[in-house]
Image 1: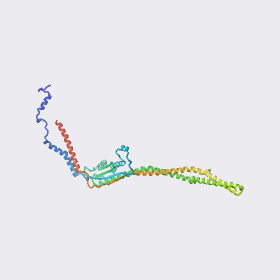
Image 2: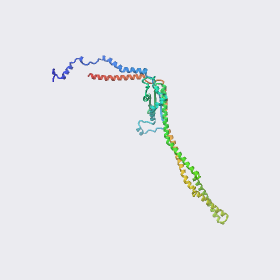
Image 3: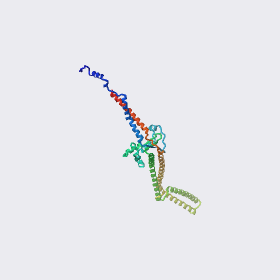
Image 4: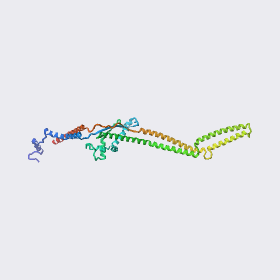
Length: 396
């Protein structure tokens, strides 16, 4: 349905817009009018933070002193040459010394280290002193977690991955406190490494010492058994006694053979009842009785013959020899274990002693003020660009 003009609604709207006067169109501010507002916003966004930073860093911020020390953790163990497979499986090349350095770093930043430092130096009182500016000091009602986080911010540890040399920097608001804290940290870390080495030595030697004790007890038991046997049978060494008896029998048999030969020879030219023949026959009979007696000692029926003594003595002697061999082997293993433990010893070597700073290194006042100014200026520029884009979009 058409209106009174006879034109479609969109045509009427276009005509109405076309005849709008310049006074009715949106008006953009002139550059002369925008300049004061831009200057005010610039001063507000960039100038005010810079002014506050200048006041704080120039007149309020407390001086921070940094004590630096360097140490390395080494061992007597020589690292094996890395082959291709090792380099592939361990591309970062983390060595045992590097692992030790990481462990010591974690210990330095731990609650245990902070507790010991608090007992020795009372760091909480120093860092929460009213002489320190309120932004830098530790809160008086700080919890243990707050204190630990603050302490970690005041201690910096850098580990050189190539040489495994550790650089320790301690921040404090007094040069003497900074130096003492760094020295105590190094000493406590050295105590940790020493305890660690003692634990390694003890664990390495424990098994070998137990083996030596067991072998020594075995030698003692076998020696006691041999002594009891000798006292009971009144025999020092049945084997040696048997050899002696066999030697006696051999000598007697030689004499018996000579006597029989003489008796046979005498019977050819003398009567059998002659004194010499009787003497030779008596000698032969005596030698035969003596030989029989000696043989009975070796294997007779008396119950104390040497054969039975040997049956009871030889096993005891064998046990003693085996026990002595086990004892000697255990002693050798102990020496090897002691050498291995010595090779695994760790040493913390501070080759740069904690320094006594003679001037504060932080805060870097001019640099911090400049950083705040540049940051605020960038923030202002970004905000101005965003605002210009928004107003331009609304103006369309």
